[in-house]
Image (cartoon, rainbow, N blue to C red; front, side, top):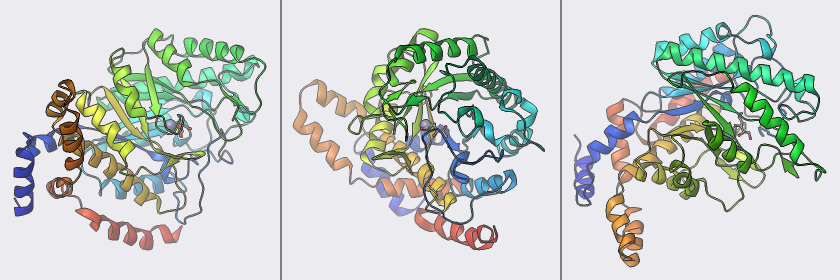
Length: 413
Ligand code: RNT
Ligand code: ZN
């Protein structure tokens, strides 16, 4: 063990924190790595441009053009990220010889991914794709007033639940199936109730089939607004929070889908008191874009702190969700994953009980002083030790690997 880790260990032990134990816990926390950062949410359907009020901006060269390239890119990223995680897929990433209509997708269309995950000891998550499609071009899906359109999307979501359950069975760990829809209006609606009533009916139908939660966990993801749907979003936070509470499914909180000064971290304790699980899309909202690459900022640290302090590392399902086409896409994966892990580590190295006691006793001077001093404790040294023992590059030493891969592989695309 190196001398700097030893000295960090003894500093933290002065706070009653066992760094080895913290790393043991960190090793067990799986983060779902979103495949869609690798190709700007393109998918393999060749369905045309990205729709649904989301956008990947930038034109950095070398994006993955097919399943083989995306998998190879993921492998490169995973080799630079400590631990064993999950890969988060979307319906549009089915690996098929010819395009399969989304309402007809079957588990077999994801065989390549199941093989990929099995060979690497990874888990898989899934999302129905309710955008970038002919039948979503007016921006409405599960809340569509046209019954035939709504039906198509209901059937698509049902199909994806079976695929998720298949992942769960095959890989021995539950898959998260997360429903996000783009539905909303640019114009102040005359009728806010009917679209939500239709969404409710659609969800009831989609979730009516009971599926073993050892294989599949269903989640619903809210949003505040999207590009082109600024006045009204059908699947709002209040809608889904109520829906999930009543129907025993999981709420997914995307950090970029709330008001600018609203923090997802603050919502976790309120939700964990009432539900078994909460799912997260960790991202970084900047002005209109809800999907910048995750940085190690205060907002991320607070989220991690809430998860760890509530002893809920197995109840909060952590996934990343951003798409940045302006920088190396593999670096974007690595930076986001490592930041999420660093934030979790910072939380695991925090003396929560001591701080909570200070709060309970009204000793706010002491609480604030310790919170601030903790910020300059040697988190980085413990993190480096973790990377070293997990066999991945320490500090920014992963960057040359990505640069080299860019020269050898991405430049050829
Ligand atoms: C969009 C949602 C959604 C998507 C992915 C691709 O605002 O955050 O989760 O980003 O499903
Ligand atoms: Zn999201």
